[in-house]
Length: 279
Ligand SMILES: [Zn+2]
Image 1 (cartoon, rainbow, N blue to C red):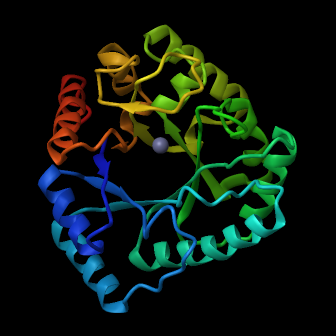
Image 2 (image 1 turned 45 degrees about the horizontal axis):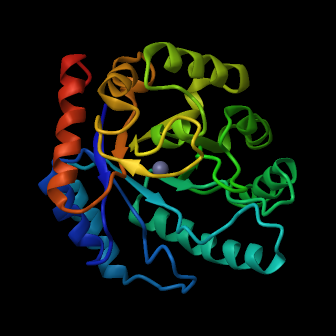
């Protein structure tokens, strides 16, 4: 089990490694640029070379990039779709340049046009990146509004159509909010069975480890500190001791009032990992 956090990119690429080191991360996640902006910025070549060099020196083997929030890969709106693809092309290119292992996307919102047509648009758009050197992971969602990806059965179509070209990111808070009772051992086992009915577990490459500030099935996406939300310590213990999930990289996206909170959340996960011989 590798442990890491989502780290703010506001002070540049190199600063993220400094923060990761302070937090004791084995891996970490970033946005490449402002996640709420459509603007396309070209990053300085020297900054990228230096980033890769320092990463290597520090022994950090895995960097994950998260797609900006505003992109929507399943939008029925032609203009949004074009803007999304234009920006995503640059994002994937830069992720390859910095040597990222994974690029996490949200499956997007069908905007009222229906889940099926949303996934068709998403899959068609993703086909254009089938030769990317960074592996694209589709993240499960809370099911808020018209978001795709709140049920594991929805992923079956993408796995079949895109085959080995994509992977999946399992967000614990989103799964819980969408109705999977992963706060108990039994609930986790049931969810695992649901997954295996639809695609092999091996498609999941990464865990977004977040507790939930809202109840199971709330469809409200609010992340919370590990062990302090509705998933709780018991939930995280079940996930970490699991023979499959417990060996994946865990990245926290918990509330960031101070950096010490990240440190504390990672400490709790590490402690559970130690208990079950995973770290
Ligand atoms: Zn997430």
